[in-house]
Image (cartoon, rainbow, N blue to C red; front, side):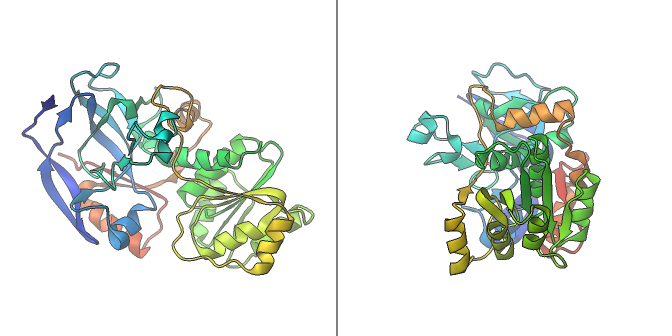
Length: 359
């Protein structure tokens, strides 16, 4: 059963690589088992910029945006547990439910998934429709601005958990101090890391890290990460290194800075090929370093403990601090201009949130 609507909504529509248009498009229809969410805020992911301006989406036209929170607007037939007015976050990956990964609840490994904001229309708009199973109610005391950062905070948590080691008393080095890097640093601290190094080339990002209470922050235009880490660890290196920038130099720095028996987590989306010197590969082998890939986050359709619920609980308790990361809140009417600024890096930004234009 499909609930039709005749209303239109404002949306930022990608018609081709770099071809963004603010348009009126139909509000998505509401099928059985689905919920329509009125967008409160949608974050701009680092992956959105190359998706919009370089790579394109899987088909056109597409509405991008996958980091979002909002208010339940309407529920389709067969939906219980949610009512209009509920604040919610939405896990944007739409799993097939029939492959071997889905049978184990490992939705991020789904063989045939859909995705809001890249394969299907996302949240640079006034409304999104998603299956009930993808929604989680936002806890009391958590704002929609904070809740819109649940997705990247869950990705950061998942990356730290991928290191597969207790961080209590350990040294962690994070390469890249963008929003994901700063969220990762907070999780490392929450999990008991004694020292958290943060490296970046942008002074404003490092200043933001200091505002969040991190002291071991270094600008790699003037400091060599390997020397910094070795000087602070008696030459032993870091227990865990997390690459969160996706550029060749940070991959090399992360691999060079890890200690014997340590772990390296590859989190940043690579923007270029990375060549590893033979001597570095030999060192990694002799140190018996573990290298982990990470993508997305764990989510439970059954409501069990997962990365998303851990994030929301940490926000509600005040353990996880995300509001200082927000540098811009931009209405849809001005969003194309802001996205171009992000592409051109014409002004400093950390987390940019887009919201429906004022009526």
